[in-house]
View 1 (cartoon, rainbow over the protein chains, first blue to last red):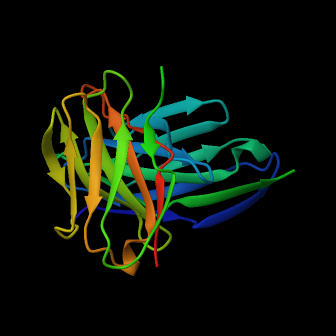
View 2: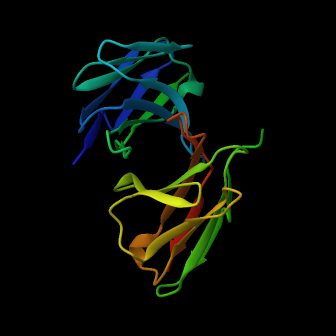
Length: 109
Length: 112
């Protein structure tokens, strides 16, 4: 059974204080690892897809990286508007998507 | 392009009743999947439909069922509701060639 574990569960940062979110996974035949952002009362919004170890993707203050066992979402100089829950998910060879529990990020001005 | 639309936004039911939730995908998207989100279990996959056929099913009891129509709109049905079915039900669509999911805002179901 595929498993995705995200840490920490919650993270409080001051505006401008860079940090990283972790996503550890075990999966049968990784087809892709996804990062989503979810704001309260809304559905998740797609951020990145990573396909193989060593791959990196960037968007504004966010950078996602992938190894064979984990992925990191690095947040550089975050702003209050980056506050949200960040979800990681893995897609396996059978086309099943498994989500982690998420990291709730709060950025204080 | 309009996003994924889910109706109703909120629903209150009592134990034993049944409920039907609706999802209209992004125009041109033929794949629709459903997820249950709870504070304790997070996001869990229910099922995926593509061109009116169920392609994958998660580990949920048979009380949870779905269907997809020829216009790609999808419905999800839960029969004999239990208190533990209280959750946010999310629908997501994709265009088939791309694994990127587009989610609706969900239906918040409360079972009393």
